[in-house]
Structures are given as C-alpha cells and as structure tokens.
Amino acid sequence: MKPYERYRTRKLLLALTAAGGLLLTACSGGAGSSEGGNAADRDISGLPAPAHGDEDSTSEQEDREAAPDHLSTFALDVDTASYDYARRTLADGRLPDPSTVRPEEFVNSFRQDYERPDGDGFSVTVDGARTDDEDWSLVRVGLATRTTERTGERLPAALTFVIDVSGSMAEPGRLDLAQESLSVMTDRLRDDDSVAIVTFSDEAETVLPMTRLDGNRDEIHDVISELDTRDSTNLGAGVETGYETAVEGLREGATNRVVLVSDALANTGDTDADTILERISGERREHGITLFGVGVGSDYGDALMERLADKGDGHTVYVSGTEEARKVFCEQLPRNIDLTARDAKAQVAFDPETVEEFRLVGYDNRRVADEDFRDDRVDGGEVGPGHTVTALYAVRTAPGAEGHLATATVRWLDPDTRDPHEESGDLETDALHDSLRAAPSRFQVTAVAAYFADALRSGDDRYRRLPGAPVPFAELADRARGLASATEDGAVRELAEAIGQADRGRD
Image (cartoon, rainbow, N blue to C red; front, side, top):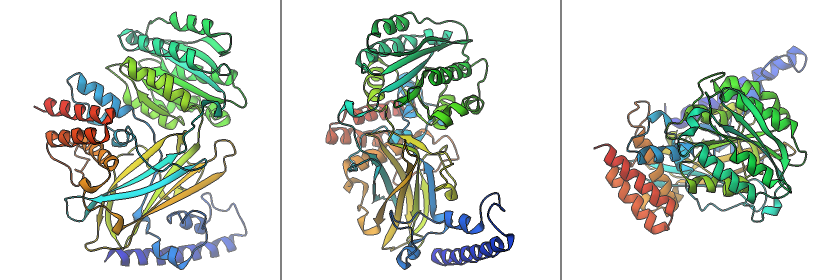
C-alpha cells in the first residue's frame, strides 16, 4: 500500500472511531465516564498540530494532516553536558562511553542564527539540505527565544546552591573550581538577589539560609571559602535539603532555583533519580522551583545528573576548567535566571505524500507520545531567554516528491499564568538546499556536530549511520576546521580539535 493510501485509510478509521466515541459518550449519560477522556478527544490529540491561530479544520489543513506514524513529538532540551563531558574525556586521551553521548546536546552546544521573536515565546525556523545518499535529506527545526539585553529586565533571583563536599570532590577541578566560580558570581549578582548554600556528603546541611546580597557579600564569601571535603556522597539528601531550604527562603516575585554542583557519583542514601525526584515533587509542582545541574570531575555520574535535570524541570551543563566555570556561573546563570517557557514541547508533522521515512537525531530520553502534545499535564522542557533549541532529522523523501514536506509546531506554557501558546513553521521540498555544502555555515556546523555524535555512538548497534556522514573522522575534522575558519567561531574550532582527538584515539 502506498504511503498516501495508508494515510487515507488511517484518516477514515480515525473518523469512524471518533463517531463511535461520540455515540458511546451520548449513551453513557455525561462526562467523567472514561478515565482517559472521550474517544473524540483522543483522536483529535493524535492528529498533528494545526497552523498557529487556526484551530478550525479547513480542507487545506485536512489535506496536510499526517497519519500518526508521520508525527514526531519531544520535550525541548537545552542541556549541553554530554558534549562538554565528551570533550573532557577526549582531552584525557579516552573515547567517551557511547551511553554518555546524546546527539541533541552536541547539536545544541553551538550558536545559531535563527530569527528571534519580537516578544515572549518562540520563533520557528525549518530548513534542510539534500545529502549524497539518494532521496535522503537532513532537516533542521530551530526554535529561538528573545534575548534579554538589559540585566535589569529580569526578576530578582533566589538561588539555593547545593554543593557536593564528598571525598571525591577533593580532586583538583571539582570543589576548588566551584568555590572560585561561586566567589566571582557573588560579586556579580545584583543587590536584590539572594543566595542560600547547602552542602552534602554522607549528610546534608544548610550552611547559609536564604540571604540578600546587599550588605552581605562578605558573609557569603566566608561561607564559600570554608567549604571542605569529607566522607561519602548522599546526593539524594543534598537535593532534598536543598529544596527544603529553597522553600523556606522562597521569595514571591522572584525566580527561585536550585543549583546542584556535583560529580554525581552518589554512593549512599538514595541513588536513583526517580526516587530522589519523588521526594521533592511537592516543592517542584507547588512552587515551580527549577533545577540547574552543574557537573564536574573527570569521573562523572552523567546519567544521574542528566535525569535529575530533565525530570526536575531544568537543565544541566558540565564544566572542566576555570574559563568554562566562570562562563556558566558568571554569564549563563545570571543571564538565564528567568524562564521564557515552561513544559515546552515540539511536534513535527511530516507530509505522508512526500516523506517515506524519517528519524529524529537524539532526544532519546525526551520523546513524548504524540497524543500528549497538547496535554499540558505531561512534562516538557523549561527554556529561558536567549536560548536556541535545535532538532535534526534524517528524512527520506519519495522519489521526485514535490510540495509540502513538514510542519513544526512548538507549544509552551507562560511561566507566570500557565496559559498555553503555540507557534509553527513550514518547509517545502523546493526550499531544500541542493547539498550540505550549499547550506548556510551554521546548518553545516549542526550537521558536523550530529555526525560526530553519531560516530562516537557507532559502537552501539541500536544506532544507524546518518545519511551523508563522512566515514573517517579525519574527513569530518577537515570539514569542522573549514567551518571554524568560515565562522571565525572558537567553539567550532574546539569541535574540530575534539574530532581530531577522537581520530587519534581510534588508532
């Protein structure tokens, strides 16, 4: 059966199911008779997102509706820890464990030139380029939030720092790095900001309750300088005490956030992310306190930190040196204290008459059921001002296909009112660039970062090679070096160096 025939058949079945659901609802005598909602609601949620601002079904929209297997839905993710930890591992002369390589975090580690929205919310950019593999293209979905140019625009911050002081943090580049960065950040935060400090080893302790910066910087510096390592790592107790301290010092009209600094090598108490998160679920849901994870150390519990951040309504980064740490604590954290969007999700509807196959690169831990796209009870991602989020797809089009290729829609909740909003963007087949080398340089950087992550995961048979991927690392490194010169971007130069190190590590 041809793709469009499968699509028409499914559409007919959906209509029949919806009609049956309506009959059953009428016979049941009212709402609340079905735990999951009525059949009509379930069927509607399985369809792709309509164009922004048009909830009505038009003939044109119906023609573009994709069958459920032509939908891709995921929670937004702005984490970058996987890429930075891979760079640290490669610099130490080792290849990263494939299980720690998350391609979306490689892709999202680089600056993009997406158009920014005029107001709050997102802009949506959808573009693509054909590859050397027949009928295969790479399609990029880019989302961007408005930057906050003046620091005075943001709300005051109430930051609870949860600092790992276990024995493993004594290694150079762990606690000492955190102390130096926190000290510099203390001088750069505003007078109307507040900080609290919780430490944990085998037990957790609040060493500084929520304290305003104004007039108290010397006291905060003293607490930071006196931090010292001891005993084992009860990360669960640290997170729980951190959230309790954040609630005790909760400031109305401020952005309340927990910042966890750890190598995440939990070895006592609760060591399971889901169990830890369950213990703080009330604080997260009632007060909207988000989690920002900062990973440190050559030996690092990547999986635990990543899951804590993803499920804890936040994101995670990894730092290995003074320059990176200062950038995170003194630039990124103060600039991105505010939130632009809560529970943000994206759904991409590929047109079944032009697309025969697609796969999302990465986001393995962020997939969302298609029917849950508009269910605002289902967890999404938290995104701040000035962020970009990129998703890359490998797409196989039907031979000679022309016309509409995909519609990407992002849905998010206003951080204050929790009102839902949506924005969409489209891509036509004639807008695809003829080759990757003909695509804009930032698109090419995205492709190289994805190819690099894909190659590092190649030891895992679950993953398939991306179309158009250069087989040898050396060729990929050459491409990255060329892009570093074209963009004059130091981050792309570091990417080229990392690929070169991976090439030498394979010898």
